[in-house]
Amino acid sequence: MDEPAMRSRDAFTVVGLGYRGANEDGEISALWARVTDYTDEFAALATGDEWYGVCTEVDESSGTVSYVAGVAAGPDATVPAEMEAADVPANEYAVFPVTLADLESDLDAIYGEWLPEAAYRRADGPEFECYGSAFDGTPESEFEYFLPVVEG
Image 1 (tube, rainbow, N blue to C red):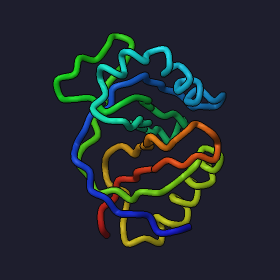
Image 2 (image 1 turned 180 degrees about the horizontal axis):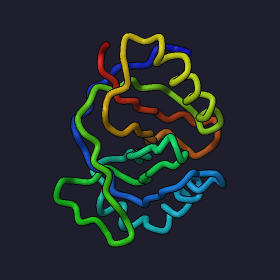
Image 3 (image 1 turned 45 degrees about the horizontal axis):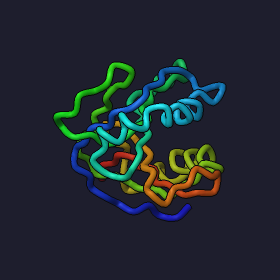
């Protein structure tokens, strides 16, 4: 695995559709498919061109996650009733290029190989995916995976 880029990010808020569960039947992929139902709402909320998938909570004992798929919104944005907000605090991040096709194996390598050997440890805060304008939704298309880290 290649070394990740290290980047600092200011705090921001993602507003989008939420999911809580074990993602056993592709529910997060289905959540992303529903995003297109809210094109106008997202256009009004977005402060940039990127889309985000934010993993706000992971319960290792039950295997469940809380996840929000959406856009970065301004501080005064009104969250539509069918959506929720995920606050992402300012942090230092290890940023990995990943693809949909290899996401599971990439995450296994990040947590099983890179992190145990790195000069960093996982920091508090959510990890997230950032889909830039070049992402086209195909399995081979790249996006970035942000893992919050601190030295030590």
